[in-house]
Image 1 (cartoon, rainbow, N blue to C red):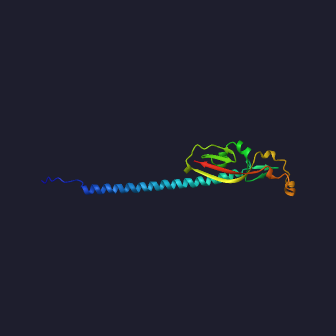
Image 2: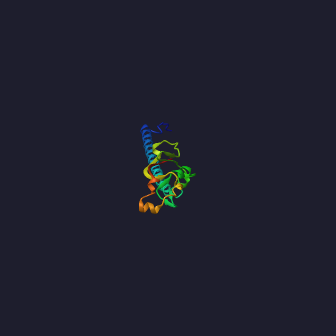
Image 3: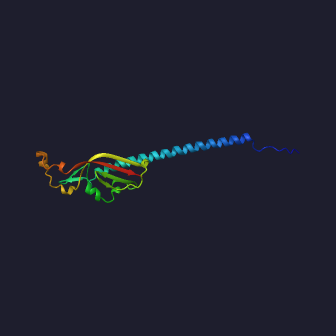
Length: 166
């Protein structure tokens, strides 16, 4: 009977297996990183779309727009109505996000997340009024014909900063 002892695994074979396992690990890690980056990009795109839609909803909302003689002025914001609006985030479709709106010196909402990578900002100029319920004295005919008692006395241009954070 032959009682020869031999190696079950050779050193070359073990080194080759270690290298193959390391290569497989690096490939899996690269795939996971790419998947994560892709998910982040999709999430950011969704956030951008929701932010743009919410901003447009905000400035065209009848409950917040300035009204003059029952005439709704789209793309204007009544600061008093905005300040007193309940459930603003739900109304504009951003209930899962944090929002902050700055118009002139007024700030509505507070952000707790200061991570710049998870924040979107829209800045533009917008016409605003303080309390459009007091604007019933405007005579639109006189304004059109004589230039008296016009909107400029009641509306002011302000910069709006609409910030959305995840």
